Amino acid sequence: MYYLFFLIVNILTFGSWYTSSVTAASTTPDLPKMHLAQKLNCNNPQTQLEINQCTNLSYQNADKKLNATYQKLLPKLDRTRKQKLITAQQAWIKFRDASCEFERSQYEGGTIAPAIYLGCLENITKERTQQLQEYLKSEI
Image 1 (cartoon, rainbow, N blue to C red):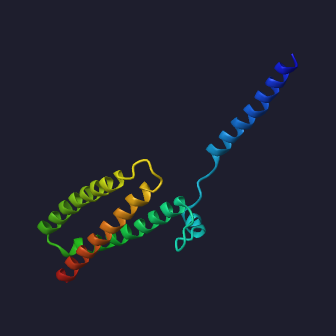
Image 2: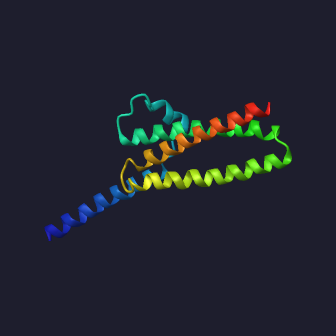
């Protein structure tokens, strides 16, 4: 009888603890991106999670530069060339994503896989930005 009482008390105690922690986790607000960036030291990441987060931030910056260059180039082109660039850019995005998926597949299931994927996206995006900048120079 004492054992049954002890078991019920433990279930109620730990069951309510588990429920409250799940509820707390599901209601915890997301941290603002800026707050996350302020806490990260991307000059010296210490964990794989930090490496992944820093690699993501680096890729996001490269992508912003690409989009800015692309948006500067579009208005300088006539209608036919503009459409060709749009088609080329869409094909390039598919290539970039497929190529980086292939590169990541070597590390599938590993904690480094996101950093490999994002690093690949960043490198290919920077190369494409340089190409578009060259086109932009020749159109001026």
